[in-house]
Picture 1 (cartoon, rainbow, N blue to C red):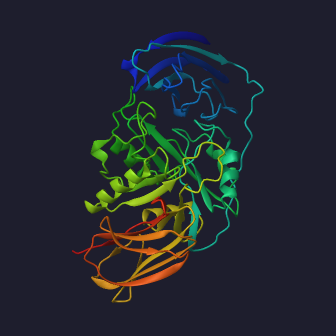
Picture 2 (cartoon, rainbow, N blue to C red):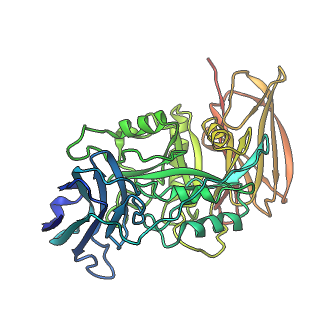
Picture 3 (tube, one colour):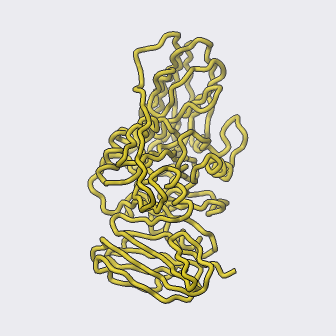
Length: 450
């Protein structure tokens, strides 16, 4: 089978999923799609026209490769281009979807598509990967990343490079969350070993907001109202992630958005935060274009409204980088170094965010009960225990209901005990450098006055 087609897109087509259907005959062993569009770049000072492709067989999703200039797809039972998954080529109606993230005003973008199927397999093969194992370590604090990318979407390094980066940072766990695809996870999990746990995920990269589906090892719908399918709201997408056992994390909500970064700024007003319970307040470098300070203030405002939310960090790393002392990692208290235990710790809010400082935040009530970050205290009196280490000459701020309640010079390491009457809604501990930039943040301890 050979098919060629072409078309054009205008500014009116931006933020649309445009389906192109084709029939694949029985007996096809290999499928190749070649796609190109022009213009991509208009001028150095302007954003590009951004188009990505998603591919669906009669049985369901076969992958996507978000925002990558290599838009050719080769697929068979034993091979798939990055972003896509190998498997039997089912006969019937297939669909290539043009995901038009950005078409600049005044532009006409033309595209060419050729589709070819073959009855014989070529020499292309993917390696076979076996999932590695991580030895049990028992309860403890485990440090790692929830947000990273590879060449299976828009990054400039391979899966093995990401794993090497995680080991160079002596992380206990790391996550691959490529945009709208899980095609890199088979290789990724093969690098799991006693020194490193790997977690599956994908970044749901919608036109009006991004979310990390943490803990998933299977594709899930990422499009709001996809063409030819049942209507999906963002709430439906979030519900599906949770039903599959994952955690739906609102990613970089205050990041620069259109036209520079499609969907990077959170735009779902009905989900501010709605039912979302996990917010990525520290994305990439603290001082970067994600506007993390604004995200933290937004998070604090939601806490003051009564939402019990969990803060997370994600490097969102896409390429080899120099040592960056403003990347945030997650320190999770978990019953073991397993995916299930890490996810449970995150759901409970038993984590703090850091690029070096080590923190402890505990409440001991008059009855002798101890509560940690993420917990809800139901008594009215007790002691607040703070401890910190590796804080250099940073400043510690005890934040109560969004305001600085008390501050200390860290002196590198130390501890404090405070007698408290728990009239507040929540409290948390920040660590900031002498420029006021965040270097660590606990999740809140909440107080119930019912």
